[in-house]
Length: 536
Ligand code: ADP
Ligand code: MG
Image 1: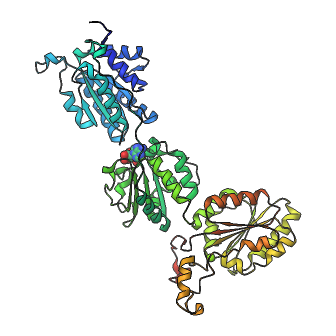
Image 2: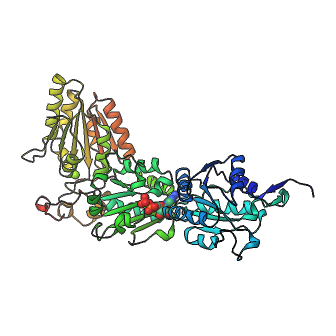
């Protein structure tokens, strides 16, 4: 019969190459030496190691680092057994890996062959797939199946058993069952309703915490997780191998206060991390009894382990993070989000003036000062209405003593009302002042436009409008534009960033950014209730 003949070893090497395998680690001996030689000939980089266990660890790390499994090549019996640790480690770590083990010749099975051992059976406990091709001809199909299984769904290890007599057996190329390279792993997204549920849980949380696991690292979700952290101002904690997905020196990294962060979080978002021993099973006393867990994982069976989650998002972390980002853009902001962006974008050396209730309190913890005498606020007397006067004074003094310095005046909507007409003064003297109003439609808390409408139906506003309420969605920025300054009405983080950018770039023009936040947005729980004892 005409046609090119190929050995089993060559077929294995070519099939691995066809599946874009780049690295092989192992120790040669009977019967796998020819496979290593053929792999090199096929362009696969082969690293000869000194113990199969180390070879297997190496191959599994390639899988984590590249998303394409490395191959570990071992001999029969003891060689295979030495590699078990590597297979288990890869599968438990959720890392893709292919192990190719030589085994005894088929015709000596049960006879006490050299290093005979039931390798396929033994491999089952440690692998997603443990198989022996039924013939040399089907080797490419089995290798494709193993590579695909190792990277689809939750990644893990796959074992392929190669009887010694397959290695040098010659087969006709035309009889081989060739299979093309498997498609990249499918990227699944979470149910839309689950994403909305997660977003509303997050919106109501007072102490949210993002836990970033190595699943997030594996899914290359770094850019989108970073965006989510920045957009929502979320504190985050990386697990050991997820360090660096968002840099450790990011201001929202709470790794230095890990125990505190875990203990106090009311909502935890798990990005590809398991609630196993590393995270104290998600249980008290390391976690709150009532902690709400939003779990994101590619493996459905993982969802709900140890703690019943408040929302389950089955899907690829990067894809689900994108879904979250898209939704987040349409949700109202809270104080923490607003201050996060202000902190990032205002000049370090600006003079900060602030007054209001939550606005001043939360701003004090979230906005750092770097120089003395650059913060003016409601002060010892807790006076509302001082802000604009203080800002005008600071701008006048800075003009003479530190020309070019900007004054940033951060006001609650109620506080601003006490002396809002001084905007005219600011414009008359053309002072470099940026006023930011954090507007929650009220004193402490307000009503949204719909609740306001409902409220008015109840009768005379003087008897039914809550005393804490101010008119919803008031366009305070128009006071600034009325006098020739720049006014911005913003509702989303993106609009806020654009307005901040324009106002700090053109600091000579007086500006006012009216930032609408969720009227229900509140500060974190106070340890000392004497200041907040009203139950509003
Ligand atoms: P860590 O040790 O960092 O806490 P774990 O290994 O416990 O992380 O958890 C990683 C989780 O990530 C696993 O449950 C795994 O199923 C999941 N995972 C792996 N890849 C992805 C992915 N692309 N998308 C979503 N989840 C993933
Ligand atoms: Mg207010």
